[in-house]
Image (cartoon, rainbow, N blue to C red; front, side, top):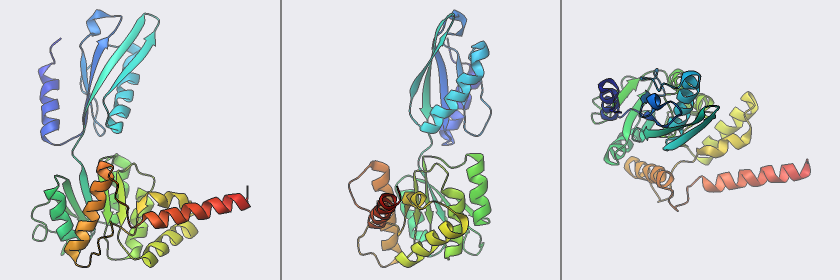
Length: 277
């Protein structure tokens, strides 16, 4: 069966717009009329097309959405009284996006490096005098919006995902605190937070003491951020951050500055569990 023009055009538009989409195709079904039927599924919109699967349709589309979130092609199999139904889910995921929260002096070279490495780059700050096109002419989006509220909205809408790399380079630990509250339970490829060991410890201690967040949740945060290259200038710090992101993205062997902090935290938790089984 040929793909309907409506679905083909929507698929091409999504790919051109760098928008994640999954194409579900019926490759086996008891009803020959369903074979070859297609549907498109997005994370943030209603599906397009009909698979002709009757009562199984809603479940198949929901499962397709889960496959899209996983970013990996997959074949779904459903046993039914009439026979087996199979769907092939082809995932067209968007390119990795670098979300820079804070538009200060490090954000400028970091945004340039992100574009150079083919990331979609978004800069967010609540200060229009910093978050503007004059400072960031090359990025995909520059937004002057409240930090925590925007993070909360994006997380709730499913705007963030496993292709999102979030870098917190804000002007103070209160903003880090606020953003982490919204991000710690959100599926992300990476969360990095700039700051000294002391600043990082202060933020994590506050989140644990005031919000009751389990300390193991902080293990996913790369803080202090980056790979140790002896960086001093904003451009050098941007290089060490981007190096860490690429290392995570590609599964590289380099150690992060934050690895030692994470290892010590796990050891402390292990000793505590031994004392209090």
